[in-house]
Figure (tube, each protein chain N blue to C red):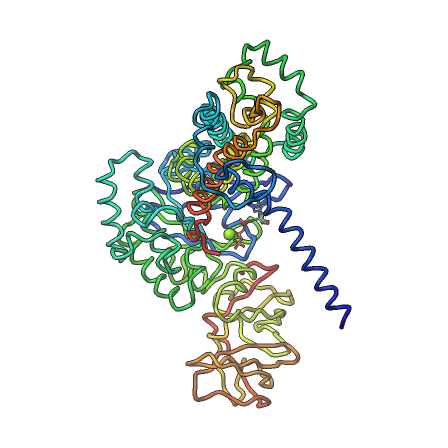
Length: 272
Length: 354
Ligand SMILES: Nc1ncnc2c1ncn2[C@@H]1O[C@H](COP(=O)(O)OP(=O)(O)OP(=O)(O)O)[C@@H](O)[C@H]1O
Ligand SMILES: [Mg+2]
């Protein structure tokens, strides 16, 4: 009996510690921006707007958020579009060695945007004149995310019945019409998932933009955060926390929006 | 409207399954044709090959005098109802019915109008704004029919459209479908594994087994004169009695009893040959007293069929079934005698009708 009680106590303590481990940084993130002179502790804020004022006046802070938006939306759109077409084809056409191809792609993708490929990617971008350009970065980021996106979407498409498409085919729909009218609406939740995943991925990506964009005016928020130091070389906590809050809000909003809008699937039409 | 013609149609699936083996079939314009057969005999494959969803390995499909063997499904001008209906779950009933017209680039107003018209004809008027998920099985089936009707195709292909309905709804839908086909006059191929459905609805029917057509004919022909023992055993709500026997002079010896040679086989048998004697339980006259040419035995089982009873006699260790009208059914263990109707009994030699 006592062993059981002790066990429960130990378990609850562990949970509490784990919870604190994750909540305290979040608490800090929402309180520090409203505190006049933030430190590393969580304090009751005095609700000042000075920190926000400072961020707004920073020459690169707000533009960098815009850059982040351009990069992540651009990549997400491209990833969803290309992955949808590729996944559909891979799911519906029997190719010899299809699964091997998919696994090879998946394996390679973790290398492409990984540290290992840093130097060759940089050289490639220089050769193609894609250095310091949003488009170039978007293309490279898309390349990195595509294999995993195709893999996930293919799974999604495999699980939607073929008879919807066959039915449309007998009515005379062309392959592109079938994709537009039937497949895309059916796998919309999957597309939304992939879109959000790509968006969040690019939003938080530091290495690639740091490597391929040298112009400060083009750099996204993830890179700009890295430059927020005081003249003394100390981390500028009031700037960092405020910018960090602004930086995280869009992602949170997006998750809420998408899960509200797509957090369901269509039912019916197929009798089981 | 168009006739459908299949010539030597063969389909071998990758992996070597021969689902259709050199089928020949002629379905005249406007006919309601049923394809009947046990599970896995190739009914769906045949329908899909006519629709063009499967490419034929050999042979030809001709629809309305046009060879469409190499034509894409959309170019064949046929419409298909799938076994699972395949209504688009993200479209409401109107959009579902209007979809074939959308593909044909009919203007939005015109196609809505057509959808409303077809929907109203099938009694769907109050459901036009619903999604398929909000409909009952019977309603979904009617939407699928409406969608096919809106195409104004040359031929309709139905893959077991009634199999998802419960028994009662099925009877209703059967009558409804037959009436609808009559009115539209569109050539229709209808797949089913329910022999009663095929008998009730079809103008003509084909019975399939393992990629082969075993008999083609009107329901009456197929029911009264099954061409082989496979069809004989497959057709009929109570299976036909198929009894091993032999020719003995001008009578037959079946299950240790002497029965008369059926009218249909008169003069076609040789003395001493082994045959299979076939007679439906419905074509047996049951009596408690013995008579000439009866199968006599002890009553083993009595099953209630509602307005009649199915009596199983043990005739020298061979089971023989007879249908007995209500009120005169025997008790288990009684002596019983069943007299086959000479004009309905059949004789099979090597599995084929004599
Ligand atoms: N895509 C496929 N690949 C390989 N073999 C197949 C394929 N589809 C069907 N078959 C095989 O072809 C044969 C005929 O199948 P089919 O689906 O036409 O039967 P069916 O008569 O429609 O049966 P059911 O009444 O169960 O629907 C079966 O042996 C089946 O296993
Ligand atoms: Mg089938």
